[in-house]
Image 1 (tube, one colour):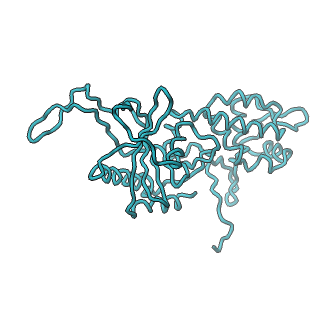
Image 2: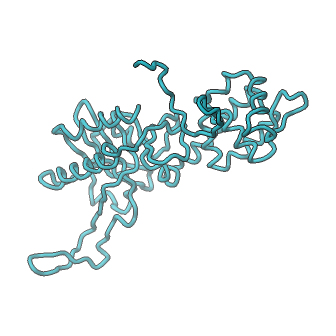
Image 3: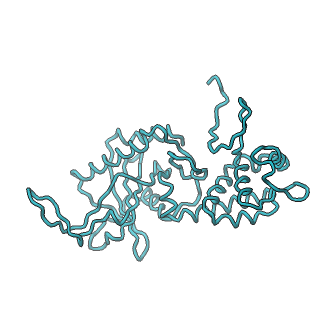
Length: 319
């Protein structure tokens, strides 16, 4: 999905008279449970819907420099929202699928459920045809407990407040739009949701493809480097997205590495020059760039570039 389509589809929720439901995701001794929050429907719930829709508007719809990328192609670019295109989804985010399949979850009950166990909130906005789910991570600082000394305004005085409070800001980390998962905050995904393990497993799939291509003298050096999460993320792009591997003959690839200014004299080869030898971290990174086709040449200036962004341009000039 491109950013234009994403913004158009999100715009639907701004203009329609649609409902909102809030869920708490709790971590308990018996595992993860989902509870529907019973929120006052007179003022609080409509205000909460408007609050988060305004956040969607400001953080996505009105952002001119935002773009959509597949998470398998994640790199160092900023102002990106990632469409999740990997097969494996972190366990905690599976709660989004659970709610999409069944919105009729048990109501949060203060006699049965412990508010201290809340780990995240899922705000569902939509109707029977379209649903937007916003996933918000819970931080301990968001729960203001009654064991603190809390004061609230009553008439012209301050009086003691004896209840727990949940404080919500309008930020969210992930969203699901009609079943498609988008990652707004990649750092949070990596820090809290075990995404590093997902990346490592995806990286190993890429290494299997590289091994089958028989382009390296020793593929084990890549397996050892998978523990470096930055390098592992670069590898994930290859399993389904390499424009080189499986497309360009290996002799052509090796000849390219011998003449391109960024690669010439930077890589080593086995006897007979039929395979590449990766003996340094620098050579490994160059090899990944090679398979991602990052080394480009301008047809206008004939200058060479190392480019992350390779957005394809239509060849229909008159279109």
